[in-house]
Length: 487
Image 1 (cartoon, rainbow, N blue to C red):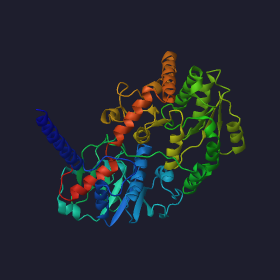
Image 2: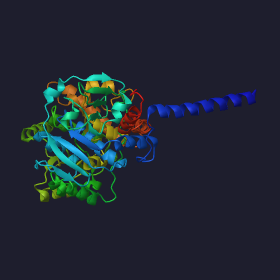
Image 3: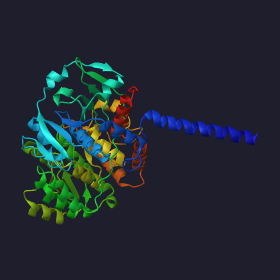
């Protein structure tokens, strides 16, 4: 009987292993483990797809959020890290807002220069193009799940864009045969739009919105040299380097709260409420905290918003004299404030927009849960297993992407609702309840063995074992090109 049981067990084990191998094949890509492996089957397949084309172009057009631009930038760097060596073209919509927003994402790009620019770090050339959002939003396409192999093999040029909202980028806009739309994390329905003599054919891929973009923490061995190099490659933000160097000099003696995602929806009130929650947490559990608090603020407030922020802080008498703000235009004062910062004081550093790698670094250095909004920022923190404060939420994305917008029962992560309560000037009890919830969240995030930390680490492992979204889509494109369906 025991021998028979062993035979059955071995047989089931063989079946399980075989099924696992088939599952990997059907998924089109293997799970991520550590740095990108250029020899993995999915990366080899993705590179095979890219190398089929004589020319690859990337597009930046008007988008509803920073995440779409960040996704396009990520794809440029991702194809380079996979080993793609051909020269690439980068097409940038000629709107001033787009040029200014993407400047820190493209090393060497100057938004004030309107002619073509060479970007040696990316081995790329930038071009401006006209984009008619309203025209493209209403242009018809033919939706399919399959396209003839010979048609795909005849394609010679490819465009890639990180998101297609509020309009679609068509191949003719940037002079290519097809456009692959790679959505930000949490967004759905990536597509391959193929140019034809009539209506373009739109290939709808399976919905991998719960797949993460695998990211690694930015941990440079020499932070100052890292900051100097990054800011040097981005002339539009290079003047911010001295303030960042001061931050690096003093951050080891204080708590850090990296602030992002506060530029809209009553950001000043939310920031004031979060600061109140930090002070409340320190009073409740003083042993968990070190020094004062440095707040490198990546979000930008205008003069009216700063006035609103100080009005909110001024309503709490014990905080009015404990919060200060420093900027890059007064480095002597900035250094004095950071050097002499008392344990019960907080200083906000007006950093503003920075290159993506510097953003990653500042968020990684945040010893308190950083504030973020948008799925791309959340993707980065989820892959690190790092608690964060969500300042803004999109309900329809919450339903689409359960891995990123989980309920409080699945993962006790603070949702945007508690922070939303902080801007409720009409209901002081609701406002205080939001501040109290944020305070408790901060305390749990500071405890290495808390259930909150364990749950974030568990989510990190879940995401590590999922395929990378970019590799998944490029691999699916290669399978499609060789005669398989997009399913």
